[in-house]
Structures are given as structure tokens and as C-alpha cells.
Length: 149
Image 1 (cartoon, rainbow, N blue to C red):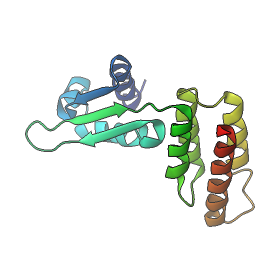
Image 2: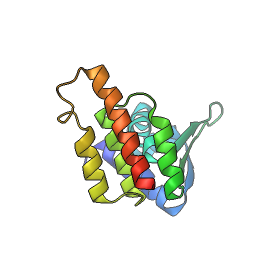
Image 3: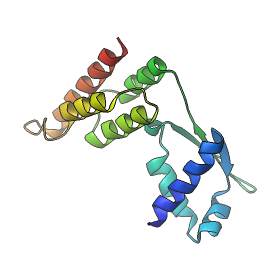
């Protein structure tokens, strides 16, 4: 198992015990035998709002990082996702949103597969990237709105 996976697993296990944790980046890095920037990388790539996390950093003294696992009811979370999409979105961001919605059991695997099929780069390949991301955002939001009905 690579180091990033080990860090993510450790943080996820801590969050399973409680919905909010505070960690000291330097202490965690020392415990895992890595550099603090590796912790930053994992936090910025795997503990994102799209995946249902809020990460706050406090500086000074022994500065710590607070990680909160956010939980909402189905419609609230879906509306937050729709609101966060904006005018355009890439395939990777759609996949992150879908993984979060699946994790919270707010959509079915079938819904996720259909949305993914409708919004993936393969489906939209004939379009220029900037138009593709605009259309993908519209399709993604409309499909989520349909699920909430």
C-alpha cells in the first residue's frame, strides 16, 4: 500500500469514530515517517468538499488541522452539490461528487452509472473542452434535480 493510501485510511478510520477530528500535521507526519507536505497532499486531494469533508487549518503554536465529515439529508446534499457545480465541471469532479453521493447512499449505483455515462468525456468527445465542461455541468445538474423529484 502506498503512503497516500495509508494516510487517507488512517484519517478515515479516525473519522469513523467521530465526525470531526483535529490532527497535528507534523505529529501525524512524524508518526507515519513522511514529510508534512504529504499530509497536505492527501488532505487536498482526498478530503475535499465534493467528497463530503471540510478541512480547516489553524496556524501558529502547534497549529492543527480540523477535518469534519459533513452529513446532510438527501435533498440538502444534492442541492449543495448542484449549487457547487457552477457553470462548468470536468469529468474528474463529477466522479468525485458521485462517489460522495454513493458513500452517503443518496443515489443508487444505477443512478451513478447513468450520470457517469451521460457526462463522461467519451460521450462528449466531439465537443471542444470548454463547451464539453459547460454541457457536462448542465447535464449533471439536471440529472441530480431529476433524482430529487
